[in-house]
Image (tube, rainbow, N blue to C red; front, side, top):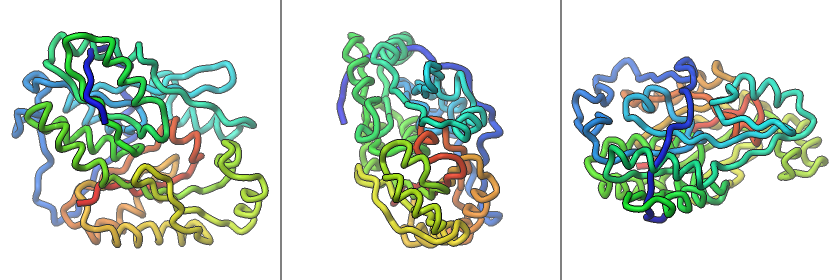
Length: 318
């Protein structure tokens, strides 16, 4: 994690709000945080900005409420390049992916794109915290660091989240609710080692196409209807177990997360599988009364490697 300097420009329109849902158990009486009850949440009064990238799968409500800047990664089909959730929607992406004979590639934002963003933010802020996709998975953090160095007189704290998808959004929310840049960095760095992503893949095809699995292994897994559960934690992608049948794997996801309690934040992510995401969330609500459980969609960049119908239980441990 590196402390650097910089400034910028916004990355495009927000995604449709229907991609995200948030729910609490009926017994909850704890209100959601809002700008009216926390001055640090009001973009105009917070002295520092918060920046992330599109792999955070940031809920649109949070992006608006906290004024978080989102810099898109890119997904490339042949000679066509699309900015994640700017030039292509999740639905359009997965439709193309399902018929692709060759896996699309992905690329990080350039240092220049980050520098543009930081320069714009420098007009109205004293500094910013920039939280990104794990460095073990992408060059995004490095690009942000280089971009920050190109902007003089603006303090940028670049944070390697060491993870992917919604835990990054949780870290952004924590940062945005902090009273100072120093407090934001401390709060985020404390939570980075506690971020977890438990993923269920519906098919091994996309791991095979990406060269992460042999064709023979993928064929055997498909024939046996094996559903791999993977855990992203401690800078690694770790196999948890391979479960026969998807329904059993979904049950196993809930059981696994129960063993991880207590958690500070939790969400259920899906790639074109909203009903099953709701099933997982319903199972978790029994063990997390009163806790907000966000249901959201996996975006194009992560979806390139997971394929459609992937599911994820993502959380930050207490």
